[in-house]
Length: 284
Length: 283
Image 1 (cartoon, rainbow over the protein chains, first blue to last red):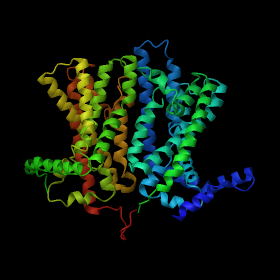
Image 2: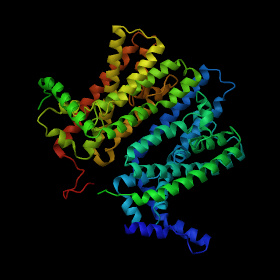
Image 3: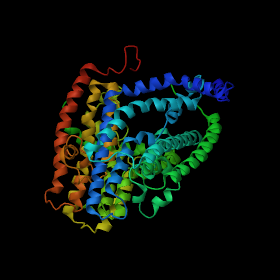
Image 4: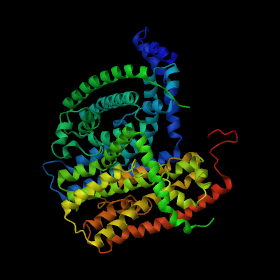
């Protein structure tokens, strides 16, 4: 149980001046990021296979949109070029629009016990590992897909300079909401004992579907898209993608995301701080 | 050892045993089972949810009507349900057993390997939620489509459904051969292949041409999971031979998969698993 005390101490506010303290704090995660990054890049065969599958899936989605627009009159609903840009950017940034850490798996297989005795906060460690794994994805998939867009007949440029600039903070908000969802699901695992696989499937199935990461919310039936637009699900993927493609009021979308970051971030941290005291690590 | 087809008569008894063991599992922890069933019933069809929502909003996708797309989703869910109910416990994810050195557990049993593979993963109750959901979705779509319930149609449907399951299993076994040579790198390959087939298999692939289109019905046959058989079954295509394409492709893939897997198995029999060091540590 001493791990919890160490964790609590390290989570306390730093006494050093803020900028220097922040830099030192970030410096502590450098090796973790590097290890996670090189580990993810080292899964050469799997990485290649996964990227190929994702790329083929992206091609299929782009082709489906082509078929949809060829066979239906969607003049008042959407423009093919905009939807294809939306789909391409959603595919290229898919990993970041569905930010998730290893926290659930670490709880499930017992690794969490070693995270608690590490000289960095648990959440910081989890986020550092996540960022480390993103590095090869960004270099090996996101950038090549964006560069290959003209070959696919898709304009990958943002709708305007402002849209491109606002996409970055919007993506940061999306990641923050994703992390909050991750923390809530980890807390749910602790509370219920449900398996990490079910949590991941739950998030993958409904998270991906209802966030607007696969199809834009405007194409949802029964007014579902309009209702989902007010939820944190839309703030995770639909909002940044809408901003990128110039669909909707960018400032309002970012403002909505910030509200969800505050609400979900606060709630998830409060719930996690209670749940982690009930954590039992098996592992081995 | 031979193929041992004389053991065919033992299949029903093995399946009955699997059913009794699954029932015992369910009765021992009903709450947990309900939870598993609910999760399966919700999440497996959700994989194709995007296709369905789009079809519902636009009254179809390309030449597919919304009811036809719904049938496609139900068919894909049923294929997944059969895998989940009849080939669980890592029988379909065979690369895990190969990679972890657990294939010995299959080889030491006093029965042919094929009999073990066909019967060991039978868990129709705990794994049957997706199957029930898939059949329900298909039945709903079937009423909307007004398809004729004739003997030829039922025969074509059954043969195509079995063929689609055969395609998915054969493809997973085919790719899993990698694990005989590279147990660590190949351990999860069947899961990756399965995920890809599942996620791509719920799209109407009519607009995909060129090498990708050909690849999706040959090397990486996601198009055979549901798209190709269903377009023939629900009348998206009027090709009279449409219903025979998936069974033919399944026979071909199966014919390639069996000797390829046997080749890997010969290596396994000679070298065993290299996953564990001489000290017993897992590499």
